[in-house]
Image (spheres, rainbow, N blue to C red):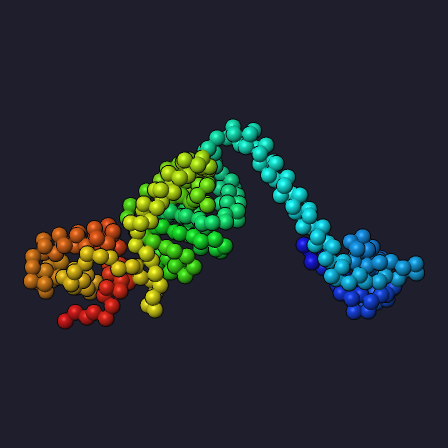
Length: 321
């Protein structure tokens, strides 16, 4: 009951008095197997909190929990309301003083500052958190941020090149279990947006560490612009979903049966020349068609396309003769 100012030792003594109703310091000390001075100090603390009353012969009587603890809860609630009221006043002072001087963009130049803001903004979020990631990953912790516990909805957008990172499929599978995840081609930068009000963005798109730094963005117009950028790439992205076989991407429109067969042959490991012979066409046509499929699926390499083909439901139950 630390939330109402009662320590573990004091709680033990209070629970004992709830059983017996009243007892002397000596009797309580015997029951809880503690020195009398220690027990007396705890009883005096409980008395000050209004949880026990003291008689004239070193006798203490318990106050019922609904009365004693109920009163403490009311006091704590009142104190919290006063703090919240004072917080609003302090924010007004800050925004008209140092906050105004800081402007709409504030530099974040140390790892400690960055983690402070990430933690504070995540805890304060009440509506939605938008996250955009692209390699190289920072401190190996970009993925840890994405995997943090969820108390508000998240939308996480990864660059497709993430699929080429070691262990990426397993990481994305873990994320897809608890939040919306998409993959998009050429994601322009890393960033995180909290409730559409505040954003954290690195100073350069491919930043892999603290240098040259990050910026905390709070200006309404700037954050709205960043949110629009996120939304544009989110709409172009492919949903990452879980199936019985693991991770899949949502179906892409525009792929015909010839495309599906080509993907199946490519996944089997056949070289372009063999694929062309099996399909009755030229090697150049196979390569041109592969480039078209990459455009349709938003992939930029055969490795990414192979991952897509292996995991996509488009190839489910398909076998090549």
